Amino acid sequence: MAGFSDKSILVLGGSRGIGAAIVRRFAADGGTVTFTYAGSKDAAEALAAETGAKALRVDSADRDALVAAVAAQGPLDVLVANAGTAIIGDPLTFEPDAVDRMIDINVRAPYHAAVEAARRMRDGGRIIVIGSVNGDRVPFAGAAAYALTKSAVQGMVRGLARDFGDRGITVNSIQPGPVDTDMNPADGPFADQMRGFMAIKRYAHADEVAELTAFIAGPHGAMITGSMQTIDGGFGA
Ligand code: NDP
Image (cartoon, rainbow, N blue to C red; front, side, top):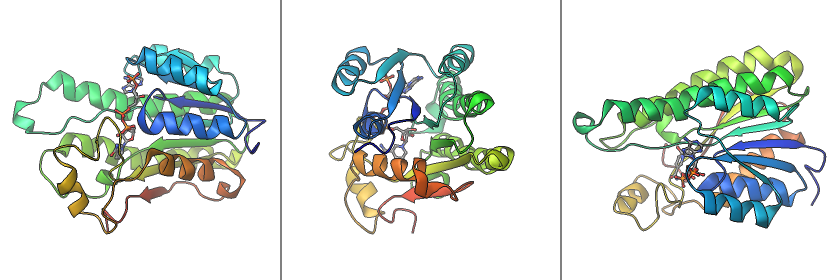
């Protein structure tokens, strides 16, 4: 495959989980891929060696470092803002700083990265933010703070799609339901409850989300913009 062979692609948060699957998908299709990570140095180096992608240690919560890293990539064809964290539980017990850090990583980082990427993105570029079906539906307790970050992504992509549409740049969110990763393992303590909300009662594989990402980033995605592409096994149905 060589569908992305002339494309420059940046994936924020690519060392593990869904982001790593997205790095693999674009690299397999010939893309020139750079990805960021924060804590998982060994995983990042292993993925870089496996795929030929370039790994950069950049904490998405550090706005200045993030913006500088995006700018340093030069003209991008595709930005995927995947890095995210989830704080789930009793909000009365949360550390406020931890909640604010999640908002920094899940909301502020994709916004500032998208705007910086758009400054020099080629016409017809793609900006994709990995949101969550929890931006639409929160059928269990303990997810208010996480859900607010994913709902914020929805407004962001609608607005930025309007801002950059005249250059043919599309801006979309991909909204997974439960996906088997370190964040939400298919054998974790909440997995049976999560499957109970789904029409197709299995966790998605990260590569299924990566495949949808590649479609949105590819030539057939040119008229998809300002949209939420949900891939959730019917969690939100
Ligand atoms: P994982 O926890 O498995 O992986 C998270 C990835 O994001 C890692 O590569 C991690 O890198 C990176 N990351 C986290 N914080 C930062 C940071 N501050 N700076 C840079 N990179 C960072 O999560 P998933 O793969 O499951 O989730 C990926 C995205 O998908 C998130 O936005 C999440 O909200 C969303 N999502 C996931 C679902 C699921 O069921 N798994 C469902 C719906 C949405 P490192 O370890 O190096 O810090």
